[in-house]
Image 1 (tube, helix red, strand yellow):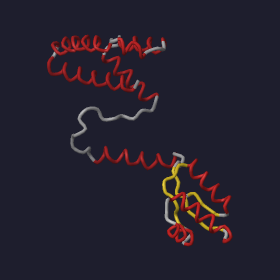
Image 2: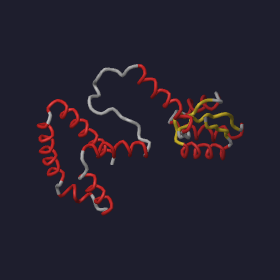
Image 3: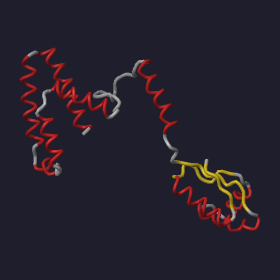
Image 4: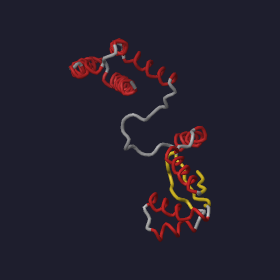
Amino acid sequence: MSLTCQYAARQCARALRSSQTQGVRAVVGLGLRRQQEARRWQSSEAAATVANPKIAGIVDQISQLTLLETADLVSTLKTRLNIPDMPIGNFAAGPAGPAVAAAPVEEEEAAPAKEEKTMFNLKLESFDAAAKPKIIKEIKAMLGLSLVESKKFVESAPKIMKESVPKEEAEKIIETLKALGGVVKME
């Protein structure tokens, strides 16, 4: 749906630019171009992808809107669905002004506070002395180290084992090492 909205917004912007510079000829040309594009999109492939009659009805209604009505639809959908404005067109243009660049930075700083952390670092904190050989073997298998490197790694605890591990995998590793007698923390 967002591609359709972006397409409609581009068409609206083009029509407004064309009508300002070329007058009535631009609107007539746009009508011909719209008919050509409509014929192109009415292939059997496009018709086969719309299996839901509710969606087909919405698509039919949107295709009958004028450009100004489509622009209103796009702006209404953006506000109702909280879709941020995205730059359309030439991405190779020069950098935006400082006022424009400052707003996204504030949004990016606020967003991570709301998100739940999904990637964790695993740190081997300690282990039972009796379980040291089992821990060394498990670390060797987990990290792909040699036996000597695994022994040095375990003896140098506390030490980061893995970085950027998904939560499910991290919990499995913690449970495995806990069963062997090790203490692992998620950070």
